[in-house]
Length: 394
Image (cartoon, rainbow, N blue to C red; front, top):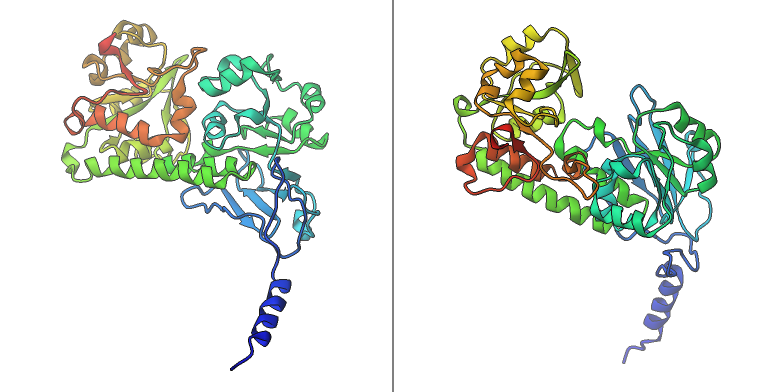
């Protein structure tokens, strides 16, 4: 009979050479660090966004934002698992902020971060916001009401002293590149840029929920939230996939202000939404990824004379008379005369904030459903729009 002792000895030796299972305390910190152990069981991959990426190592992650602000150079942030030692990093990461994760405190610099914070369970970590009254997300509003969350931008400019005194684990800026935010970084505050608005695809913007999840070690929650968005977005796409080109209405997107019309760029996320909703965009040949200005309204009138629908119009419009007061030529557009002017402020938060600018970024599937119901109402009979209202219904 073959002895089992050599086999048992081999198993025991193997057990000694394998890294121990990771153990964490109540705050998510490692209780006994073991080199070679992978401390990130759940990981995120970036499939649609092109403005951020993440690389995982055993006990830290390197997150990179390619365009943190207009004209800015790419930035990297080193996220180190709590309870583990400082990693040895390549020279190019010598100046990168080191941030211990999961973070316990965050100052939020953009309302578009709010739905992502809800999705990854990070609302409780918010210790400061730019302006309370700008926030529309109910969960964050309730958190602010119950806790001592500071307000650091009441005058329209970041109060550097207040932010430094708050000493957050992360100051999550909105990607605007303000000089005050740069001063925070010099003062030693870990500044991270949540620059989802520079994505040109709707799902690319929505995928920034994964970016938020990285700071809370909440990749599982972020992945699940985003997968749900993709599933619903794809289902909406299928509704109009067979619509012939000649049945795809021409669409105008934008609003006038002080005699200038701010139109969505032809390569912007809104132009992409129009195409995905079964429409054709008036300025689809434009190469702008954001918005662009039309100072000669006659150019706009000529371009939009065949547009059947006008979306993303000013939230100040309630009737055709309001448009005429802005400029009679805009009120004479066929879309305006037909009552096909749509304003994205139907859903508001408890403070009156417009949810489209928060929830709409993370839930483009909902925005797409709204647009399909506007452009092709036969595809969605009985659908109740979430974000959009028409001047014809006021």
